[in-house]
Length: 81
Image 1 (cartoon, rainbow, N blue to C red):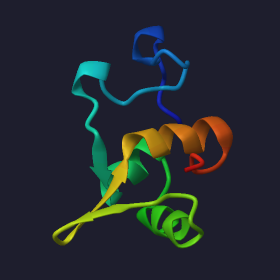
Image 2: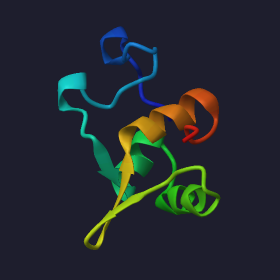
Image 3: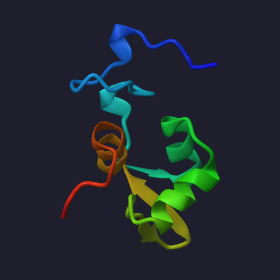
Image 4: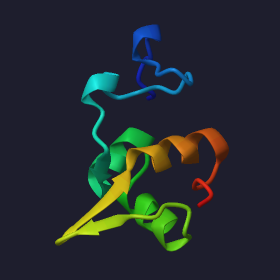
């Protein structure tokens, strides 16, 4: 069941934000990105393989830039570079 979204939890573009803007991290690990998108972790990995998300590797961590998640939801794809 989808979670209820209050007006206070929407960011400036009207997209539901899981946390206040001041606490929004620059990047998210794959499990956190899956939670934000409300999809499985395997779906996030699939989006990476399809080049719809471009992760950043730092050590053993695979991080997804928050801006890419917003672009994916708003435009259905990764931001153009």
